[in-house]
Length: 274
Image 1: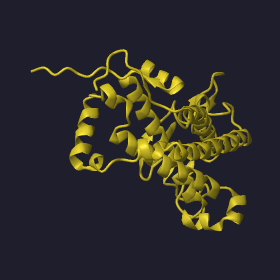
Image 2 (image 1 turned 120 degrees about the vertical axis):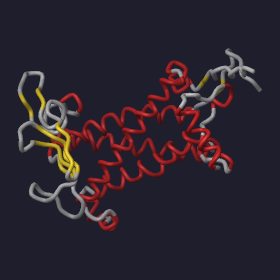
Image 3 (image 1 turned 90 degrees about the horizontal axis):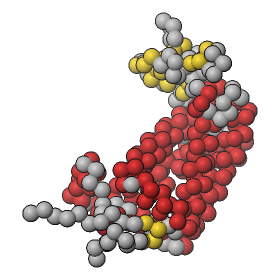
Image 4 (image 1 turned 180 degrees about the vertical axis):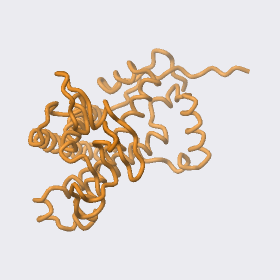
């Protein structure tokens, strides 16, 4: 059935909408407080140990020739004025990895950042657990997120990729359903990145090491867990950036309304031109 400009469809149930907004606030605080925690030691390692003189695979800090740079392995990019060395609102040069406007708190405080991080980590985990229970009960996972066999065929996947690359987004009733790229992205986040973030976060806690020593062994040491935690955060940032870009491309007012009220107005079907 073709949709008219006045058609409205109920797209997002209440548990999904609540989790989305709690998640948005939690992720903002977790990411920005995490950057402040990273500022305390702006280096990443693989293995058991990590100290100033150990070999880091990623570091943000002073350059031997002056200024600052981001170094990954043997490659580096000058970042003076952005990362590693920047000027605060009082005109003072600061040599922390991430600038004040990207961190919580904005002034250097490892203890303060940890408090923010741990508080919203629990908010994030508890909200996610309630969302998972609700999504099993109302069959959101099975009905909306699990790909169908035909959707996983190479022809269907390639057609969806080409359509998104050309910004030919779904119209009509199809716009109210998750397409295969959305499903795969959400499943990767829900069952890949988020569990890894939680488990590696627990691995970095000394108390949890004593209670669950197998986590330490699973990730190859606390420093490896810290690196995986950082990479998962980068993956979540990439997902959020792509998600926001698609919201803008699909019509931000319509998309925002559907995530606030649940009701979505599908774009009208395209007319074929012979």
